Image 1: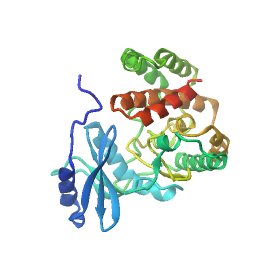
Image 2: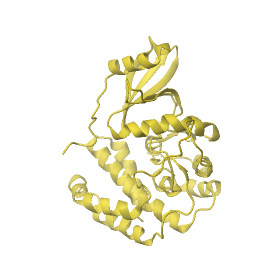
Image 3: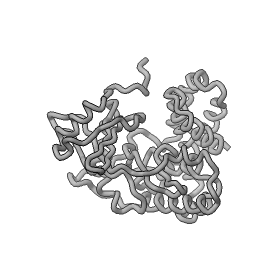
Image 4: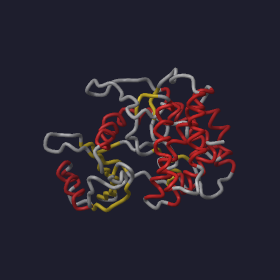
Length: 312
């Protein structure tokens, strides 16, 4: 079986530079260096006259749709949000000659939450982070649905992220593999907890909204003093269940941030909390598997912290 974390479409800096110049001649002469690699995209830092951009290229077929989502919808949503997001400045939508899209975004300065949260955060900074993240998600989840510039409706939950019964079945199939890879982790107990939450959740969400879709400690940027600096990686953006994003309660927020988060976000019903909890466990198990296989100890530590909190 092909390892799902290995790039199907590897790309080096020279190839990235050529693709960028072909689509955006104004960037000819810019320096292009490798920046990061995630599940779906390969990223390069592009520097031209002290202006820095991050260009992201899909590294496997499923990421094509995700990249298109970002390029189509983020320019519309970004101006309505209180925190900077990775809004594309350069949009290379698919063409007959170049069917794989890619995008360029202004480089956002900050530290990934899983790095910052390794150290203790003062109580006032925790409360501020809770307020900022709660306000951001409260606004995002309540933005109205709209069409894009071509009259297309918002994308839906194509991957059944909020369907806990579906997720529980998938997790049950995967648990033998997870046991082998993660022998020190309580895999059976985590699978059982998701199954319990799936049976205690009464039907789908009653109110849908815009959701990030993949929000956790890998995609929240914090400043040096712990303030919310930005939200990145929006390929899973869709119109769906807000519970999908509320896993940040366990995966990002320090304990001292929780009251201010709730106050800033607004009311959350019990069924939504249960779906958020189950989604967080499923999601962080996948993140932990990826982190272990790709040797990312800080990500693995953050995923284990989230799993401990969410399984309680």
